[in-house]
Image (cartoon, rainbow, N blue to C red; front, side):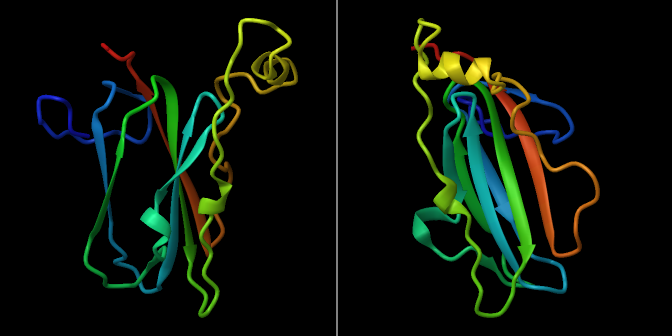
Length: 156
């Protein structure tokens, strides 16, 4: 993460990190294993929005073994609880598996309990903990990891 001061720091993936609004999050990917990988990274916000982070601009999400590092960035916004979901799968020849199609806009929350946000909250989609990483054992061909972070309120 690079803050407004320009200083870089690492994020600990075991707890929710506190990040200033509009900080740059830089993600470096490199396949050092024996197999080619398909990598999809999705950003989730607390308004149920999903935005693709990697691959950028409809490029291929294939990460070849022994490849040079690939760097992609995302900005810490909106304010509130956010997650980066890393989906890594062993690539199968001729079968690209890019999950960027899961992108969706967030839900606008109203003050009325009859708003869509209020309805979703009542049926079990409370703001925290509704989208967690897969627990249990990962399969040998796929892995899902979640990086949680809280973005502080904007100073604008």
